[in-house]
Length: 60
Image (cartoon, rainbow, N blue to C red; front, side, top):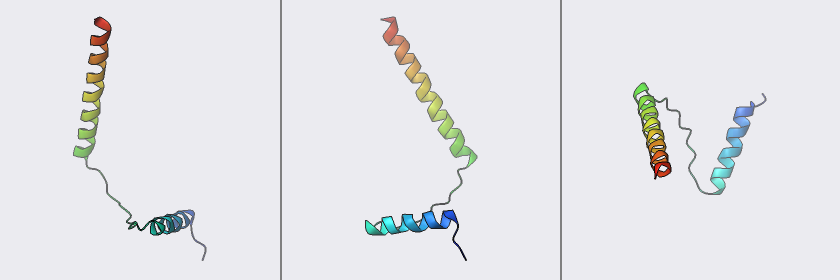
């Protein structure tokens, strides 16, 4: 039975990681809605802060 592309890529990745002594673990986690909201909130806070700083620099 032939391997799928995903299986082939995973095999190559494991070989490369083994070469460097890194443990290979497939992480399969689904973010929660709270994670998503926090990420969006952090981004919007950063973006607003950047805009305010730019406006303050241009105002002087």
